[in-house]
Length: 283
Image (cartoon, rainbow, N blue to C red; front, side):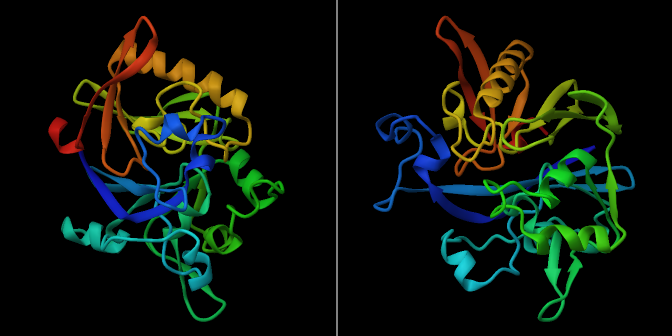
């Protein structure tokens, strides 16, 4: 098995929204904001090469939305999903599986491309797109709070292509969904978000998606305003961070602007950041 970080570009989101009820005087120490209170974030995906399978976890924001839409997010950088995959010597057609942690636009937008003015097609024509039935229903029948994040042009064409399959959620932790890959299901950010847990060289590498967007979110109360069930996030996050510190998990962070991975440690004041490092240091 080989693992590759896939950079798809940077964007900005409001710092207050990203840290919820935590005062700016606290969160700005780790995530400084610009004059408009916007913080910079990554949209970092993960490519897993395992035998004949080439599996992509999340796809970034894509490029098919309108200029008006993108103007709200201040996209920056030269990285794109296609460029990052091809730089590694692969093509888009080589991808066999796309694991979508959840269907918010910054996680699944790159899965579908525009094919004409009002037509869309899968970016990865040979891939199976993996979601789960519970989250799919949540996204296709969205509540008013999340409706702006679940864009039908990102989601419905996946099903229409015939390339969609559902992972069976048996409980909150489902083992061996793929070879050496388990899935942790969490419900605080959005219903039934899937976090891949990769068993790699006697280590567990966890793709954090939006349970832990960045190292700056490690303190327990630092919960995003975007989360639909923040009290559930607190429970899920607290339980997970303790286990991650106890068992020395490596956390792969999708949205941390500067850091790909981190480890945690237990202290008298709770779980704290131990180290940050690029993924290549453990490969």
